[in-house]
Length: 101
View (cartoon, rainbow, N blue to C red):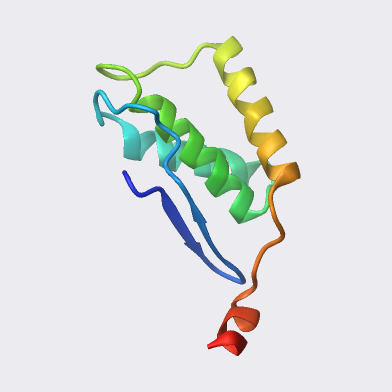
């Protein structure tokens, strides 16, 4: 959604929304679900699948009407995603967070 995604599992992570502008939310949830399934099917960590799903849903809302991604845009988005995944800060695990409270 407009606030991004909150993942709660072994760690708690917030991923900000990736769309610069929202033109049409048609298919955003379907896109998120399909991209999440793509990541899980390809044996990615769930957190990484969530990052992919968040990015793809952001692309889906960035145009009017349903969004069909072409192979070039898909590859570019995946490169950006993997760069983000490889350079993000370490996860804060739930037990570490609870110890701080």
